[in-house]
Each structure stands twice: as C-alpha cells, then as structure tokens.
Length: 282
Length: 273
View (tube, each protein chain N blue to C red):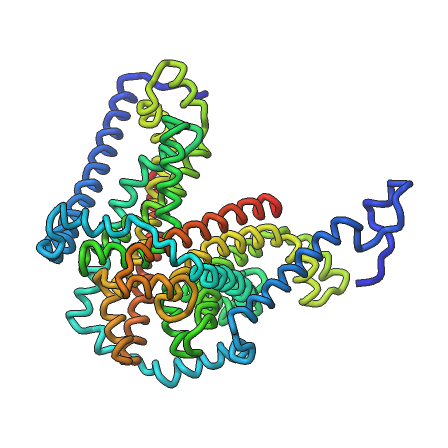
C-alpha cells in the first residue's frame, strides 16, 4: 500500500484537519482495550503457572503422544457385542433426554418469551431463571448430582441430559418466539383470547417448523453430551471410556474415541438430513 | 391477496390434502411414541436399581443434603474461580489462533487447494466439534500432564470447530469486489486477506468469539473433573469427601461466574455490533 494523506471522506469537509490514521479518543480506547486484554492474558498465563515452552510445543507433544500411545486403535474391542449394545444405550438415552427436555422446554420458553409471556411479573422471571440455571450447569455436573441421588445407571444419565436439553432448547425456543410476527397475537388478544389460547393458535403455528428443527438439533447435541455422561456413572459408551482410561488401555481408548467420532458424524448427518426434510415439508 | 377458490372440486381436493397430511403426521408421531416406549423400557425400567433409590423419602433425603451452604469454603473458592475464568479467556484466545488457519483452509473461495486442503479443513472443524471437551481434556492431560495447561488446550481445541465454521461461512459470503480491487492494484495474497477480507468478516467473527467465550466459562468449570484445575477440581474434592453443602457452595460459585460472563458478553456484543 502507498502512503495516503487524504481519503474521499475528508475531501468535502473544508474544516477537517489533515487525515490521520489515529483519531484521538477512539484510537486510544481501542488500542488501550487491546493492550489491557493482552496484559490480562499474560498475567493469566503467569497466574495459572503455564509453562510457555510446554504451551508452544504442546501440539507437537500431542501428535507424539497420539502416535506413540494411541496408535494403532484396538478396533476389535469396539466391535464387541457389549460395546455395541452400549452404543444403543447411548442412543436411547440421548433420544429420551432430548424428548423430555424439549417437552419441558416448550412451556418454559413460553413463560420466558417477553412478548407472549402469560405473566410478566412472576412467570417470566421464573421461566428465565429455570432456563438459565439449566444452561449454566454443565451436563457432567448434572450427571454427578443425579448419580449421587439416583445411583449409577441410565436413569441418572437421562435426567442429566433432560436438564441439559431444557437449557439448550429453552433458550433457542424463547428466541424464536420473540421473533414472531405480532399481528396474529394482537388480533387474538383483541378478540378476547386467554394467553394460553394466544399461545396455541397465534404462536404455535408460526414457530412449528422452527421448533421441529430445533428439537432435531437438540437431539444431535444431546447425543454428543450422552457420549460422556457415562464417564461419571450415567451409563452408555462413557462408562467403557472411563474404565479403559483408568486401566491405561490406551489403544482401546483410541478405538472408543474413534467410535464416538464416527457416531457423532452419523448423528450430525442424520440431523442435517431430517432438518432439511422438515424445511422442505413445511 | 389471491382469490380463494371455493368451488366444490377445489374444496374436496383441499380436504383430501389435509387428510393426507393428518395421516402422515399421525404416523410420524406414532413411530416416535413407539420408539420412546422402547427407550423407556430399555433405559429406565430395566436398568434402574429401584431399591437403591428407596422410594420418595429416599430421594427427598438425598436431595435435601444439598440444601445448605458451607460458608466456611468461601476463602478457598476465590482462587479456583479466578483460575476457571482465566482458563476460559486464554483458551478462547488460543482457540481463535487455531481456528484462523482452519477457517482459511475450509472456506471454499479462499482455500489454497480445493481438492486436498478444503476437505482437510472441513474435517478438522467436524473433528473438533464431535469430540467432547472432557475427552479432549483426557487426551491433553496424558500429553502435557496435570495443571491448567491441558484445560486451556482442551477448551481451545473444542472452540476451533464452532469459531472456524462461522468464520469460514462469513468468508464465503463476503462481497468479492474489494478483494478484486486489491488484486487489481497488485496486492499479494496476504494483503488481500488483511485489507479485503478481514474488515468484512470482523464483526461476525468477534460476536462469535464472544459467544464462544461465554460457553467456554461453563466448559472450564468442569475441566477439573479430569485433572485440569479450577472450580471442577474443588467440586470433585467436595463430592469425594461427601461434603454436600460444600458441593452446593461450589455450584453457587459456578452459577455466579456464569451469570457474570453472560452479563459481560451481553454488553460486549452490544458494543461490537
């Protein structure tokens, strides 16, 4: 780039000073913020005791570890019947958790959408709080909590996935409801409909297709989460992962991770195809 | 508005269509319900140890243990909370660095080789998103040892997929004219990117990064469960020593931290867009 002293913006302005790359307050704020962020990051690395040399060489080490210890994956192990059954368990868990989560998320989303919320004083904050707290706590923490209450097994996993899906789908649903066309809602309100009737006949027809798409996507995400809830006692593939990690059976761990990747890819492909089909059928 | 055809033939056809659609929806719902019944049978009824749960009182008793706060844990909470926050920040920034080349490879209009490197970029995006953060953390703990570093790397690897996917889509949707103008005046590949592409995708990418940072705080709060420090480690210790009120204290700390993150990201996004 060549040196430039004027830009088209400043040609018309007679009283404008000579063009400068830096403008007094804006540039100061911008670069100051950048500097502060960099300082904070540097201090964080220091505070967290991160070895910079290790950080720079981390990807190389990662490749080294993978090729030394995790290769070749023990594929026979993942083709065993016990493991294949656990894949089926994982699928069932994700499906149930996703379904229950979506069913519970719909009323919560209705409460927490500002434009059609049935009661803005009480139900709106309650719905918001429900969705936010389900979202805020990670699915693994939900799993640990449910395992401590319900014991090991898939019931705990399904409950944890349900909470996770409420948080995930609830927010997307509420966003979707808040973006609807308010015309039908106002018309129904003017005709004296109750807020439930408004929801059923003015909101649902507008968001039906979007909700179906979101529900399918929720299942996809729930499946990803379901692959690890077993790690903390929730049943499914994660349980095999934990056992082999603790026994340092690295080749089996590699095979399990590979199988997770393959299953997630299949789930993603399936959900993409289903969502396209739903969009076509609307 | 178009005129509505109300001749008997058209009405009959409409009714037919409606009946067909009703049947189809009914079939889909019936299939879904049968599938759910099968899942409930397999996972909940057969797999659960009902005697271990011990009825309603047993559940109420075990839930009730969590309804108290161990305020004595307060001084121990400060440093792990800071660690969690910093791990999320550093991990997000590192994730941005990793996702730059991936987005470059995976955007159809700027990729250096469409036959080989484009699929590689796409595959890296999918790989990063399909492996759960806990699994990434396990791999990195075995590669670089315990501490905050594996947590940072796991968060970074997990963020790459989302950030680079949105970035690649933004690159594919840019206005091609500035790029051509810079090429026409003799700009090289780097100048095309820096002056032609970057200013166009900048707001989208920044908003995505802020969104991802918000999610990464949640993720970094559980990194400790597999040995990567932060609040997760404290949670794990309290859980293993059966200090249930301490567990709820840690959860409250996580909630507050995430609420803070949500507020900050809300204002940051407003400032950016």
